[in-house]
Length: 356
Ligand code: DCP
Ligand code: MG
Image (cartoon, rainbow, N blue to C red):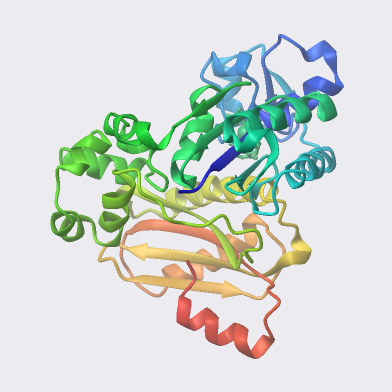
């Protein structure tokens, strides 16, 4: 039985900016470029969230929801610095640290001797130290596995922590809405609702066979997650090979103008994901576009180019669209990353594993 802590900073970029400019305190703040209002927000503080303003929302729309919103340009150098500070604190407790982005990480504290081995007390101590060092608050989830710890860290946000003990797993998971499950986005959630699954308890009533036949490999993961089972280890040195953002549309898209509009949105999301994961151009090997057509056939177009810019993606998208005269149901934009593997190995792994 593992003891996992998931730590996640509260409204991270916004909190850093407010800390450094106290005049912003108590006012609704969104992080995004004030000049390029056509973009999307990286995040917003909790005051702004009361108006429905949140990460990935188009800035123009956020300003409509909250006209008093103060826009602050992101400053990644500052966020990176805080990220290093918090990682130093994690290292005082364990080597098993898996950072997920600049502001969050899993820690496996199963063998940690501090605080008499109590993961709850360790999490509290870590949050206190983070505050002392950075003047920023963090929330924590404590649970027997990564899946539950991540959900738990969201439960008492901001500046709180929530524990799910092994005995509490069954009752906690039973009423959990399916959209809280890792990897269940809007489209999958709608599909699950259509099948009559609103909560994890509902999924538990279905057999593995049923789930597999209606949802494929997703069904298998759901079978486990809906029971609170997750055997994934905390992996401290994982090498990421790619990062992409995909949107499946509720209706297939035919018109090129509409595709360009969607591509622009997907592109903005990709940019903010790259920032959040701190992936700079020097780490990028190639850029690619993935298109799934109405008949589920898919194609990928890539280019050995480390510049992440919208125009290049649009050129790739148009190239892909020429391959089939059909409406599209999914559009993905992404980057392949440089790995420590040799060039010759790269090509084969690329072909074997596909792009996703
Ligand atoms: N981020 C981004 N684009 C997104 C989501 C997040 O650029 N679509 C950036 C800004 C966030 C940071 O990553 O501050 C951390 O992401 P979180 O999802 O943890 O969100 P916050 O820390 O802002 O808020 P919360 O208190 O909900 O964790
Ligand atoms: Mg956060």
